[in-house]
Image (tube, rainbow, N blue to C red; front, top):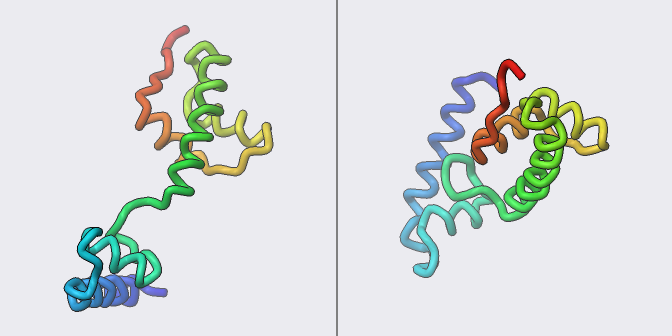
Length: 109
């Protein structure tokens, strides 16, 4: 898939959403309900509740590893700790969760 195809594909999705906006349920926002009808198109809507629940579970594990390291470990080492414990996640997700929850590492300990 080239970049040109991706751009055209995204443009088609937005065009579809705009064209079918009036057919959506009034209880929800037009973009959100259309995305659910069109199988969750990127760029509209929110993250799924499943992903949010998984982030909350990972946050508990990340905080445990963070406090066990006395606030020294950052995202790469916490990711390795989680991986060693059998958790499957990416280091980018760990870094995003750490940034979102303002967990700062100590320097020069």
